[in-house]
Image (cartoon, rainbow, N blue to C red; front, side, top):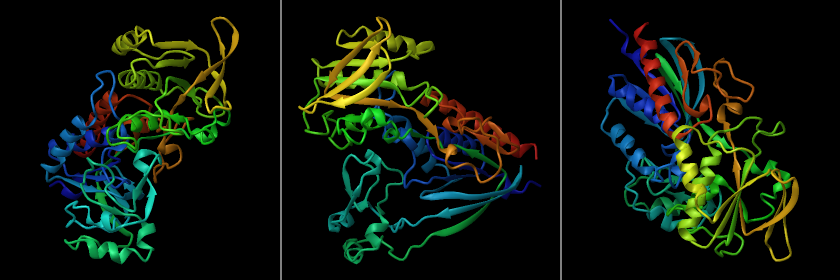
Length: 419
């Protein structure tokens, strides 16, 4: 008779590849544990304004998956959790999980009384630090699980008891401490995803020095209705509408000093964001500085559609330096590789298309698996019983990571069955 304990599957990470792997495996009849380090599920996709090429909001797909999770008793979710250790072999893994305190229990109704009583503020990580949020906060408006979080800075303050007393449902527990949990599973899907390359390392582009130089992920939040400006794309320095927006492709990518590889999605992401600007500001001028345009297969149609817009200019050349003039405007120094002329082009707002760095490059699996030169897991079959999914193993689009998550779920099931 099969050991039901080791017939279970652990999914680490809850972006689109992890969510897909979890719901597919559970709906096939297997018990699944989801371990997510953030206080909410959804990964980077939850921070997007629109997908491309359809330009629809990501909450459609996320809500479907959240509903599938809610309706399936085979799935157990652990947020604010991290896998610290994996030992054993295929069909019989022992996993150690650290559970970090949320300081809010399951009685939370999201009434918001704790936030009303709180005066302390912290940087809003969901909006990439572009605004502040109360230290008693809901991660975002569509968060799942829909439950508040108290930041440690609040717990360590004299204000903590006041915030606890404001909760009418006894949902705040100031005595929560980190805990360790042990799981026994038959197979593991590792789907910890990616992070934006750190634009602070790009010295010549002025990120962090000039407030109107932002990154592509920050632009997603600027355009989002739940973002720091309620969806209004404005210059962070003065709140004014930009008349000229420059998109700088390969910002740190295809560069041996930074990310040596192409992330594949940045060109299309910038074109998508160009449509955001054009919708809000019909007279705005947009310049996309590029080395090559990567728009393969059916996505080339999207490129051709964007290219037809007379207010969007594609400029072949890699930006060498960004400076600021006396009026606060930005100047991009770039060589036009089609004419071999050096040019200085002004812009009101600059968006750096930073690449996708795998989280495994800095936080590898707690068990030996092979990696490539860039920190991605070298193969979907990382080792017997452990499978990499989504951007853990290659930079790619949302639609592809969904397919990859399904494939990883099948591999994880096969791994259990053959034992």
